[in-house]
Image (cartoon, rainbow, N blue to C red; front, side, top):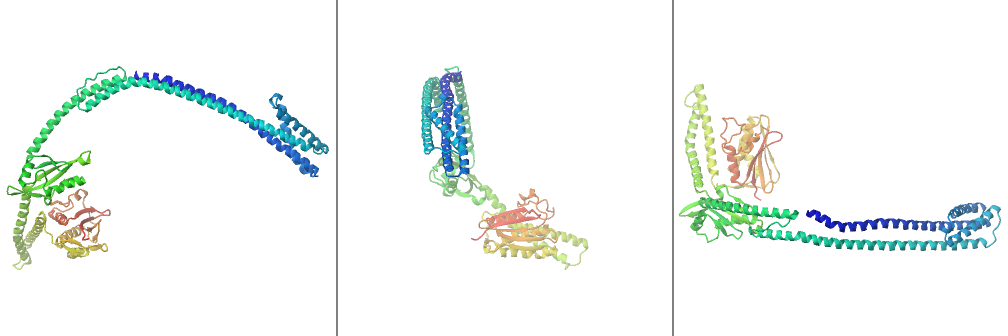
Length: 595
């Protein structure tokens, strides 16, 4: 209905404007074509008169050339001018007498006289009286110029008419546009009054809803499209009221649940705003802050730096290792916490908040220390009798205490092999106990990569030669020194070399390399052409006690690569394994250089 009113209201104004524009376009097109055609006729007449003047001049020249005795050339010149004069005279015969102006009639008579006298003169070889030809040509030129002037005046008149008619059409169109604008303005004002009033009322009610005034008494006032909008608005307002009621109840219940959860949570939890003030802290956090005697509303310096990192860079802090624990003395007891700082985003970057969770790991830390001490103690204590038993079995195998039957020798050899495996397991356990401590002590020294590689390769030459495997070095030039614990790095690299020899076929080649890996990092690695590592094992091959599916069930205990990882981690490095495209593996670790 409202759409129909808009269409019918705008139709008269649009119709007037369209009618005026169509009238102006068609009328102007017709008049313009007529005037342009008249101009074209005048320009053609002027062009022919100019050509006539040229032909007259040629005839005059031909007569002078004849008098000078040049009959052949004069005849050609006369022929060119005479042909155009004859065609022009013929065109003038075809015109009605009343269509020629007096000047054109006079010019017609003069040209006829010129054509007759010159034609007879050339035909009879008679002479035209002296001065007569010049006088006739001069009169023709004067009359022709007068005719051209008449045509130019006519063209000017036509242009003036065209300009006048253009002005008339312009004023007609402008008047039509003004009338249409006035009419459309009147219609627009009328329609706006019909449309804007209910829209303003709807806007006022919507602003009240935005201002949290949910009770509205707005009622539909129309039955057209705006009335449908009013009905939809009233229905929306009712739905919003119901949604707000349900949401408010849910928020209240959620808040109570969260407060109850945080209150019973054993770990301290604090919410900190952009001004570094506490906006919430659970009872555990309140007890901890009061116990350590921190200034009211301020964070302990060991925690404040991590919180500032979140506010400064936006990176959240997730502490996982015991090295990142912070300790506080509470009631004469040392407590250890792993801090976790989570960013709570806000559209305004200056108003972001963060949640600080202090995970109590005191018992876990004590358990870890007890485990490491227990492993180290048991390994050390068991190592002595294992070594003694191994020596005893070795003496028996040497047969220094008497001869042995073949079965006895086989059984003793089996026991010796098992004791050797147990010896390796104890060595590994001692290394793990040493490296598992929160701050493992490293006897670091400056060493060149070449020296590290040579020391690691040397013990394996004999075994490699036995299997007909060639071990070669590959070092990048000018590598800087690295700060390492030579004994530990020797263990890690030797483990890689030993595994490469173990899994390589006789007659193959192993490459131990060192090269730069990015900025301030040196990469040590061992390349072989063995069977490679199954893809499903690569992600877990450095885990403790994990044994690849390619490893025989009686070979190893799954600690060698784990110890390598612990050694590299203690040096703040990176360890990894890749399968080579042409077969084999690349076991490597990266260590910081000394620059």
